[in-house]
Amino acid sequence: MPSVLVENYFRTEKLPQIWCPGCGHGIITRSIASAIEKSGIDKNKICIVSGIGCSSRAPGYLDFNTLHTTHGRALAFATGIKMAKPEIKVIVIMGDGDATAIGGNHLIHACRRNIGITAIVYNNSIYGMTGGQYSPTTPKYDKGTTAPYGNIDKAFDICKLAASAGATYVGRATAYHASLVTSLVQNAISNEGFSLIEAISMCPTYYGRKNKKGSAVSMMEWQKNSAINISAAAKMSPEALEGKFLIGELKNSPEPEYTNEYQKIIDRLKKESQ
Image (cartoon, rainbow, N blue to C red; front, side, top):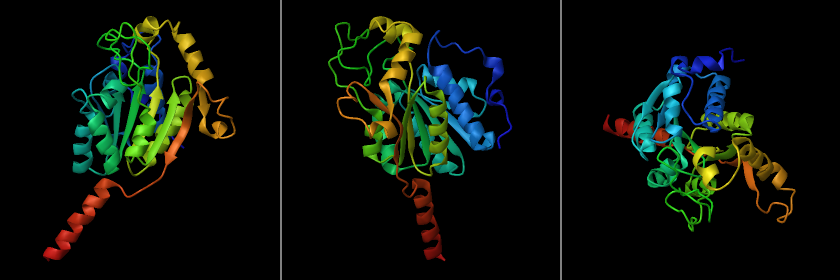
């Protein structure tokens, strides 16, 4: 059984964190640390990578090998780390814009390769750090600073995107369902291939205010009331599922992992050259 306190996975001298009051990112970050603690993996065998954005502040608080990279390129850096040191567990923390807008191409190809990386997308439906621009996950007709009259783009379903692109483990939870975030991340880390966990967060400062979603508590209540576990959803009618979204383990389909397949080529060429 794990015996290390979750606090020991944080750079406590960097606390308290500077996320806005009511932001869900702190809850999700704590859930990730708890998942790692429960996994029992040596913290020196883990590397956490982020891009740019609200969520990408997390590696500054987490006491691991960490890399804070450029906007949308976290998966590219993480791929380099995994190829150079395949024995390392690589975890990537991204926001919804970071992962699916500027970083969307990296995301689909990391999924396609099935490289052994765990991607955790903090989805707060907005670009929070830069002033509230709408993102690829902003619900249709909701507002942002770049969509003052309402966004007319259809929102991405990040989990469906990842699953269809080839990710072998996919799950979704919310800041309200913090224990589910922990269990999904723990499962994702143990998966040999590419894993993606979408963590629905809340941004009361920009998204909430612009769209009259109420307080952070109200936004968490919405998560509680709108999320349906996939096991329960299987027994519900389409009418009952109207306006809801699924949480839980959405895909678990192991396939050969990319760095292992790459090593087979190296081993074969060495053997042929002897």
